[in-house]
Amino acid sequence: MDVQQIASQVISGSSHPDWWAAPATAIGGAVIALFFSPIQDWFRALFATPRFLVTTENGPPCSVMMPVTSSDGAAFLGLTLYLRIFVENVGSAAARNVEVYAQSLHRLCKDGSRELVRLFPPMNLGWANTMNSQESLRIPSISPYMGRYCDVCWVADPTRFPRMLQAQGHTEITSGGVVIAPGLNTQPTEEHQVHSGAKMGFAVVIQPNNQGHLVGPGPATYLLDVLVAAENCRPILCILEILHAGKWTADETTMLRDFAHMKVNKILKVNKVNKIFKLRRQWRSVGGRD
Image (cartoon, rainbow, N blue to C red; front, side, top):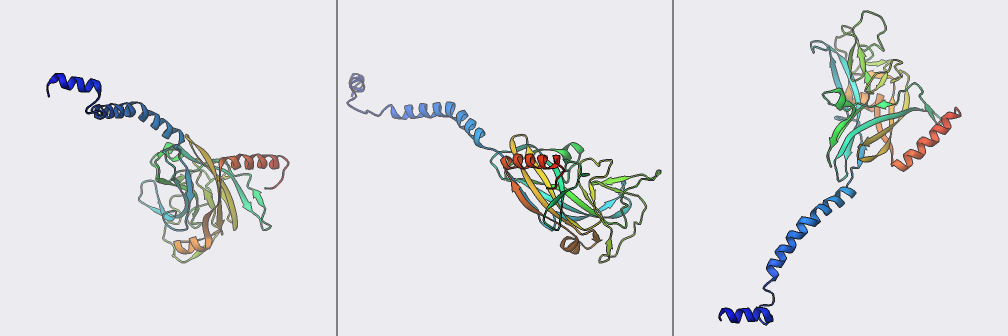
């Protein structure tokens, strides 16, 4: 078959009608990749959002007994029990600038009502295991299926940690919101010895001058309203139920079982959060209880 015959067959379409299919497919694929891939990424970014899940448990690493030392690490000053939540991103996009805000604290009454603790300062809670104050306030990013621990509250050994030092001439050492005095009763305590008079403190990023972040030492059950929010997603309201018995022992198992523990009472979405906050503001304006 000479060139003239091939040309006539191509023009007439009588032979090899699909000779153009392969190059057309390649060109079409390139066009789709060039124009539709950015559109697909745009739609994915439009509908992919972070989503938070908040959990806790009465045992390490959520609840853990930690030693506190002097600023130079030379002296052991005592033990502190930390209660934490685990904030996990179960969404399909990274959460940016994530923060945890303690909105209000209530004491659970015997009749089931909630009494507002008015001295409690609404403030951010500090992220655990951070190297600087800025990261303690706000985590830059939490990737999908990753999470971080956030300190909620702590209970300190009352035989080592004074409630608050007011006398002049004492140097205060701060550890996770705990103000301690160097040189006070730094000898080890019997592990199973129980002491009363233990206060609970909430791990706010800044200690207020009125010490409103401290409660107790009387036994009580508290409900802490916590907002978990990020720059690129709506917040959720997490209600934490915290038992504080006002007692202390150096035995971690006994402490978590009998004297201090926490659970997630309820998690609400943003539409319910706004409604609840509005109702509470109206109720407080007339001097009522929650």
